[in-house]
Image (cartoon, rainbow, N blue to C red; front, side, top):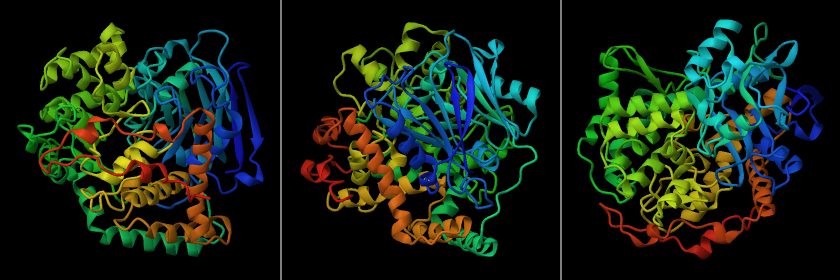
Length: 564
């Protein structure tokens, strides 16, 4: 993994560059942050020719190590106007790494309004004009490309939402079944890819093999140790059995699972979307869970079948069940699954669009609980109606259009399905992360109703998240005691690269990533004054524990003062 592939869409040329020596221990999110901070003007318009899109596998993606196949997409976000990294599972990262590609940098914009794909194989890369692919939904697009280039390709694509440059649009990645079910969803990076005229990146790694580490036996031994840790971890056992919906019972009782546009309170029929219920229903229809990437031992991804016994959607996740479910007063499992499929096909973030639709309900445009009306609105995203265009640009835009001032967003991005009033370390993450409101940027539920110690918990979780995002490790495969991963990563990286890293060196991967991101945002005009949550979260008590977000703002503002 030692080549940088630079795609110049203005010139329609591909340049292959040797990776600089100081990039050796940069991958995924860390590499994306370094490239963006070096090459993109912080004040650039996110959809202009000055912005760039970086696609980078993690440092261990092409090896046999399990759950290291997440791929990072990075750019300046058209939604948050900050630096942004969004990552997803699937097969693309492993294939890119095995082709020796450390990163793809996409720059410039085509002179004419054309649709292109980037085709990558062992011979290099081509930019191919593909007008026939314009407007295709993600599922049809993936199938069309597989028919042409083979079933074993990896596809990174955008749907119609990305082509329309909607700021809630996603970048889809195909899973092991070839379905575009994995999404780099947050921050509207699909719009950046669409602005470059690129409909898809096709990766054909036929003829390549797993990357051999410098010290094979040490590497294999550490993998065995990691697998043993995961097999003995009760929290991972639950995720393997029920997927991420396994937490719904707990989080709904805590009050952390949003309902009624973050007003809180019980939602009738919530037991219909409990992890246990979904598992029972899905198994009766022939559905299953699987690993979205090769070698995954957690296998948490739910391949959900409809009432007819046919595949309906893959990766039916907690966040979607909350933001398109309880937050809208909806608990119809099949309706939510249909919405999830539609969002994957369109290439739209379920968190962002769910929160945007909640603003319509808040304003009385549609009623809470009306699942069929939500489905109609999602159809309008493709049709390009005014209401479709509005919600396609996210919660903040929708609320502004409607004249609402009680909006669950931070730095312009919809707050995910973990209410900060009931999980206060996560609330600190939402308002301080360079990413904006993003649960994967640093999740910690310890002593979640107390305000004490939550800033430190958030900082530690953010450093760990930045580290694992840089090596491509899956957040859902983290042991309950996440800090043990530093020791595992020391052994794996040293065996893979022949280095002599220690725990502090590995931790510094995450710290330096955060520094790069914070520096970019500072240059873009972001200050501590922006590290705030919506006022209502400090004022309105959340049932059933009648809590508010009460972490001291002075503590929050000092969170990164000791990063060095």
